[in-house]
Length: 467
Image 1 (cartoon, one colour):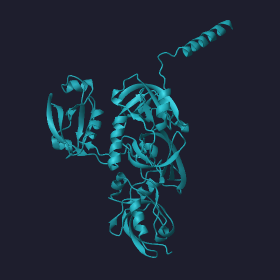
Image 2 (cartoon, one colour):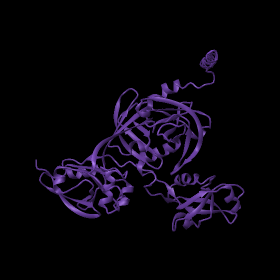
Image 3 (cartoon, rainbow, N blue to C red):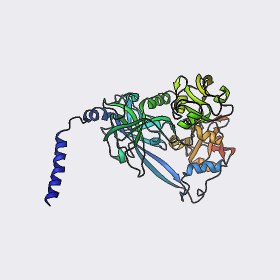
Image 4 (cartoon, helix red, strand yellow):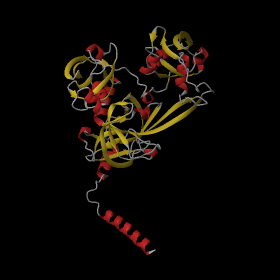
């Protein structure tokens, strides 16, 4: 009993000593007080249709598209009537401009029909998606407000391993939660993530933190909290953030054009290990080894071939294969660059014209923002815009997906899952354009919609309701 008491006393005594001597530990209070006002909570709602059996893991809307355009439907996805429900999700974000521009993760808003932003002072705003980039998991939102608090941006390149960092967000819906840790590693490559050199930290990040800021000790944002490695679904000490310079480059392009343009050269690559380096006559393991070269692609036209090792691209050294996609994608399509290639145990320079990377990536399609579901007006139509990947998959250049068909639309024979490709001979690209054209139809008159169903195009006469 005495020994147990003494042991307890020793432990308690050491705890008191630790509490009484916090010298050298960081104080985050000023950062939270000053910068926390610019951190926002993001909540989304979406109307979802799912197969009754749910066995395939594919939502009903995607299955409708597959069926109607003649694509094979995965096993287990054929049963039951679809059911409709409202799905909600939570995330975080931060204000980068005082007139209402907000950064968050693309996956936070990917399926959203409605986005609500809540400030620390409890004010709420409806937000619209200015643009979203699935490949980097970055989305830019806009709310209608002015004179908002905004964050200060730092330089992620100046971060050092072991440096203290701080996260603010709403894990599991708990508003304005602050967690801290250190930078564990920089430039981390993750599976199927070719365009982001992640910052790895041990900051506690959980569901709901996604899209929130990572601060350095100067109170500057150095990253966007994006992913965790977990076997449980919760924090396990491995958190990953998108460097702020990568995110801001994406945000600038989204603000300017609504999309991100990237370069490509048409190769598949692998790392060069020590044994491969020796076999190719390299003095050290470095560069990106070309496994294959796409026929008639940019690299092929430049004379590159399988077995070449890229040592430099546009003047930038390539230390490992994970760096090449990021370096290439940052180059404007059509640019002529010099590449240094190791071939036949000799380094040589070659000229290459960079191609353009197409939209759509199967590894990140779950993060693609598919557009808000919008009411098309008096005809009872509810539609959403198709993104570039969906249009390409369906072989269309324009079109709107019918989500619901009621009233006059249902009487005319329109169905959920149809694609409205045009009105008369005019293509339709946006819900706003469709609404405008439909509103111009006089009561009792009809308008010809060109729809695509089951891979077949046809016209349907849609009559405007009489007053």
